[in-house]
Length: 247
Image (cartoon, rainbow, N blue to C red; front, side, top):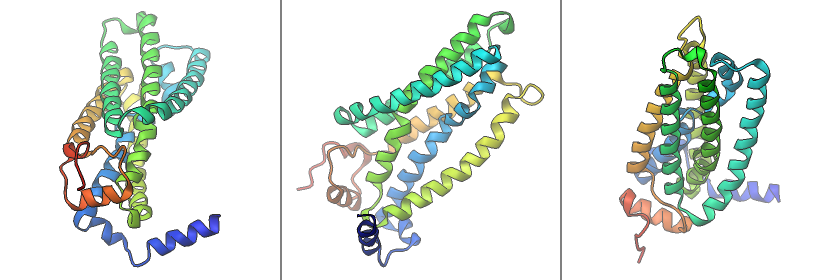
């Protein structure tokens, strides 16, 4: 099965190059693929990798930080499972953009809570911020996390899917390196010492990502790959994808 699948993919992509991903209607499709994949990082997912450290910075004990870190992963797993149900009933664009809006709101709340006077003398605030992180990870894994890959594959041209995904992955990886280097400098006490205020940074990026999604990410639910090829070739406006008639 694997050998046959590999043979069919090579046959399908025969004669195509990476340059084709940036020609005509394929440029728009590559732009969407790069955008939805990169937004995973811009919306703050790499904060999850520093969650245990972040929890200790905002005032939790080491044991509590560890327990909440485990809870964070459990909530994320639950969200991913529930996303399968959402995808069956709601459009990709709706789930993705709504999720981004929710992520941005939660990140701003975390940032605002960090600005409360006498923050370190109020341990309850740290627990509220931690709870917000749990909700953030639930929403992320309900929407932006898994739905990104659905949009990524459906918006890529069939013959160029492998190359489009490769380009998107490479750019996301470069962006990931930059953010991974930046976060410790932003939250470390002997550097930026931003603590929860980092929520303002990623909340702003998530908000801008929402605006980009509204204007550029089309609704692909219920469309065949052939229909999508035709619609992109006809340069159908983003917000007309849902009700557009091929005939």
